[in-house]
Length: 120
Image (cartoon, rainbow, N blue to C red; front, top):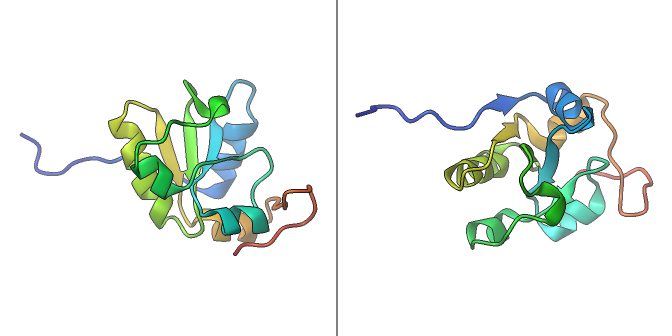
């Protein structure tokens, strides 16, 4: 019997970027709400709000059968999402500090048109 459950791993924004840019690498899954996603996101990310994931929604097609790097605004929702995904058998890690840390690290944030986005 295990006294402590080990959850999915965590990565910083720089490692998340490396993992998602690598050929055949991980997919960046953004689990924020629609208005947050619309305001600004990491280029190439796919979207599935945590509420939908928790309700049993399937992963978006680009994220199926791929390792996942999960991100939200600050890292709380992405941690929960990574746990849900791991329980479903997905290889998932979450990004410490979320999109706030991503932007602070100077990594790109775009809106739906590819212009400079903001973190809502």
